[in-house]
Image (cartoon, rainbow, N blue to C red; front, side, top):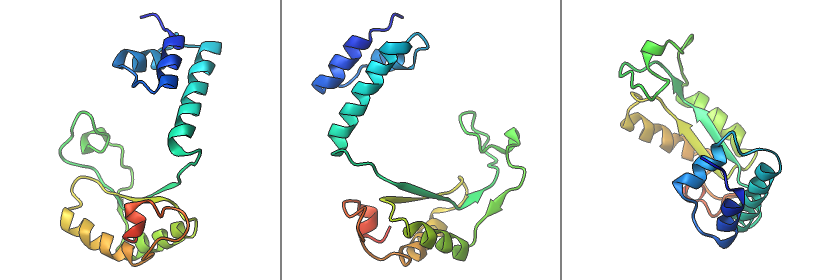
Length: 151
């Protein structure tokens, strides 16, 4: 595959979505030096235009990290892979304390991360507790549904 950075830049500048081939070219080790800089600059300009030149702050709390018995080949959480030296699960109080700490920094978004078997009922219960930490929008994140609802 030959890379064509000018085509990628032109498509980006015109607002035309990139093709799968364009995406592969961007990831290609053949795209180097000045050509790579042009593509990155075009991406930067496009994203600043789309975002109104505003970055967003995301925060995440890893609620648990335990091996999963499903051992899906695409997922690193399988117990067969042996990646968890010390599995853990945070308590509701620990999650809420971490959420309070993160709320001080006014993130636009808070994500609670779980492994596969945590359970939807437990997730809902925990989410209700975490929402009590910050009940409404304060500054950043007012356009985020999660903040309007309390996270």
